[in-house]
Length: 149
Image (cartoon, rainbow, N blue to C red; front, side, top):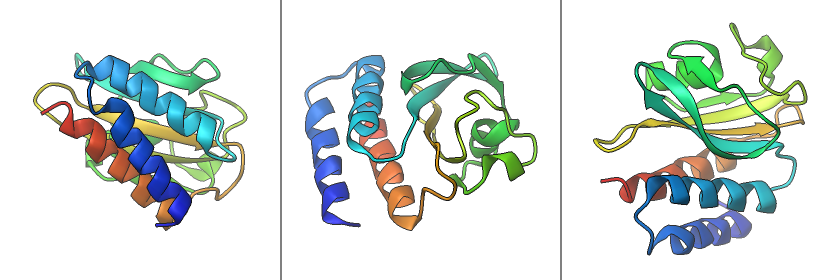
């Protein structure tokens, strides 16, 4: 992972290290990545509530409030419990267009006893995310999840 991403990960760890509230930590992580990454237009969390993903803290344009498990990129990531890296969201079967400007997306699922859901990052640029970004977002999710357990 490149030096800038290592620094961003260190900032994420420091930002939430002394806070135990999962909503506050999600809000700060979303804001940190939104404001320090190029070519992203939405960063946020969806949390599992009553069998669907419900919008949590985010930075960016208003978003879909509820996403069924198994639908769209977020619902698929959660259902399959695998990170989804999508180079062209319009080519993804069943894509849910919450922001018409989004072209590519990464969604990282997480499960804990306290709170489960997905971490979602969108870009207005096709094929914006590669292996380094996938690794960064998964590691950010690991840091976030550590505070939940």
